[in-house]
Image (cartoon, rainbow, N blue to C red):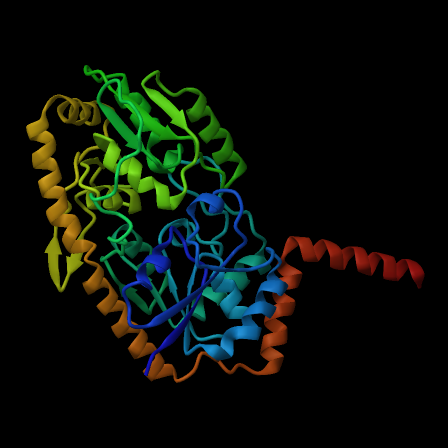
Length: 402
């Protein structure tokens, strides 16, 4: 019997890549395609018509009977909760290290909160989190899962589509005047762009960095900071427009090397994608972050192991100057990446998990009472500031008439 999974939300195309290799059928419903989504979305998403929570819940209620179980990413969790589904949640970033159910959560590199939610809003998001059957994540996410969840499940493997990212793709037709790095990630503190700009001051070699003109916008502070980073870019950095996901491989195969995250201490998607395209990567590795595959510890082979600007500059210069260094680095990185991003093994892990969930929970329906469902929705509407304002205005007008 084929298991049918409803996915609400897909961050960075993770579930879109996964469903190509699982025997489980995964149907993804994502927010409207706008802003960065125009470039990053998979072509085969079903989309919500708008961002209104009530409309999104209505859509899920219309189709949920076609599925056996649910998985969520990002704010998809609140939709699954309000639609009364059995769901697991997959976390990849600020959705768990700065969650909405914590008062004024922030990142260590930011000055202000990422979310400013009232008590009722935070209570709602905590209940949505706690209602998940399980919380999934690994690598640097794991400490946060352990902190907030009693039913977390660790996975350190990642999924990257090798049919989309590989070294057989023809490079773009663009002239290189000197050694050229490619940086497709946002310009923002979370990616360590500020560290890169500082590191370039210590570099002794001549090179260009082709940087996608994309910056952080999740908060007003991040937008301001990211724009300052953009405007202060070194002369080596050349901006190019946003690239569609199905075109980015051509840049990976064209570049001499790729610059990844220099703050997080672990890899993200672009580092793995680049290695699949046989292009070496500079990516800061925090040795305290562990990777466990089949109960065995595996060490990341990315470099450097310090994100001090001077140390990053040394690695940049070595990558530019020495083909032998680049070849050795790429060899080590490929050995690590081809194991941790093995599509077949990753798909088998997820198929096994979905099998367990469907066997245990029997249905996608959580079967809460109608009273509880109404109460959850009312609490969300009252807690949400937009709806609170509408309710207040209504009550004010009501009193005025009487």
